[in-house]
Length: 166
Image (cartoon, rainbow, N blue to C red; front, top):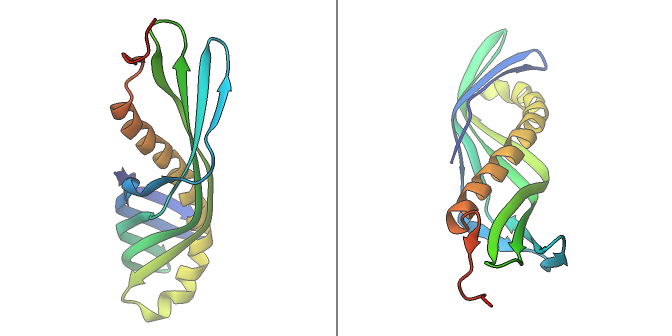
């Protein structure tokens, strides 16, 4: 999945990044017990998930602060939690829908810059926290959308469940 380009200014630094990527959705795993509850003629199924491997980064960045520097960067995420909520309609015919996807936690975000400027490390480290906060919100939204899209291909809205009948 591609990430949107970044064009932002924080801590007095103009920062742009292109070629963003988010990969490894196949590393999803169930990290806690599934919660099932009965709600209004249906059953809600909450599946707590996490990604074992998070591969996020940008192929190119540019930062301007009196002088300019460029390179690429990767994003490391220590902890992530995702809830997928499915709704099973209990009226005939039974239908399964993806109610919503919630990214409930993205913690321990670290940015690893790669560039050729050895003197730039202090500037890059000061940029890291501002960029990590910016990336947290964007990544939550992108993860929700990506997982939602993948699930909707697997579970179409109002997917009929032929094995459940009168």
